[in-house]
Picture: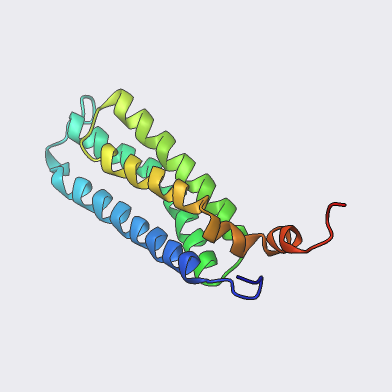
Length: 145
């Protein structure tokens, strides 16, 4: 396979998977926020459910970064890979903190999804698209005598 036969399908698939992740995080946040009866909350002693709903705001910065990286992947921009890697790490960090404090049910699927996305980001098909010079240099003859 020559250097001109680079497939962009994995990169576009990652862009769609990242966009799906943002939609899922927004849906989870909306679901948790709507489960709380905010009129019955005592400001001096909020319920555990209210605290969990409010702490979901910690996902807003990584979700924004994930959305930017999804758009970058769909437009084949190099910065998308770094943004995606950082946002997945931040999502994992938020999940670990939430697990240590509240142990909500939803941290397991989010962590699994983040780990799978990190593995997919580091796959050969994706790296070839973002580092075409490095892979072309390896394939050129005459490198070692």
